[in-house]
Length: 104
Image: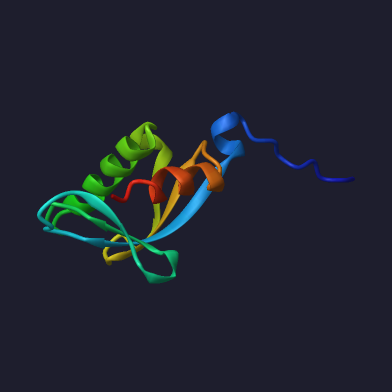
């Protein structure tokens, strides 16, 4: 008997993008900085205690990408500065265009 592949339940599950970032808590302002090699550094005003920086990161990314907070998921790096973030409901190309064009 052949197994049936499970289908995504909704559009949000169909498309997702992963991004590797480095955060800098306790910065003077929230901003995105492009580092050498194309990696992103996100500076956050929140302190790195009691999950405040992670919450600020999720809110900041959701605001920058114009999506809901529930579409931003920290996949790994909950206690470190290096994090992998999953953006649900958005393709890799769209996510990169929106984030990489934030620089001034």
